[in-house]
Image (cartoon, rainbow, N blue to C red; front, side, top):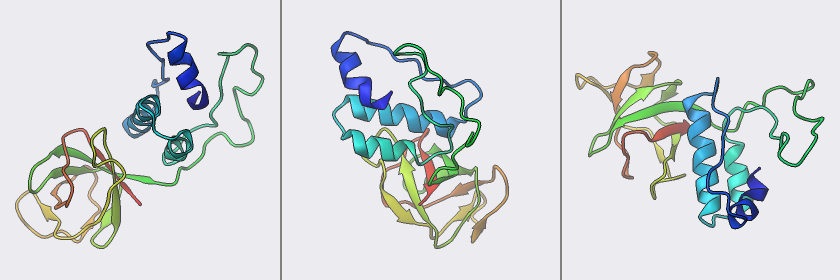
Length: 163
């Protein structure tokens, strides 16, 4: 529906239903952020590329414009996406607190998914620490909370993904 958002908004539509049942937090954050940015004037091509970053089924217009035989794709039910979900930001600040959602290591590049100006900024993981201050080189413990320095402002609710 991304290509039609502007026309729908101009026609007076003031609310969009984004299917979220059985979807990940990462998927929903990615789609809502891309749609919001598109409605605010971001280039549609850039936001279409943004939608490709997380795993998803084939995008369709479903039944918005009448009958749709392409609602279900039996050949390719899921696209992996170009970015892997790495962490949720729990607290911002000088040394943000994040919770590991997918493995990442010192030296990896992470990208920020945020409604803020930090959106799509990248940084290299370095100086990562466990909550007790112990250095951590490999975030491999599921749901582990880590302090992770970042040169860009992060806020609770932001998502980090491997670039």
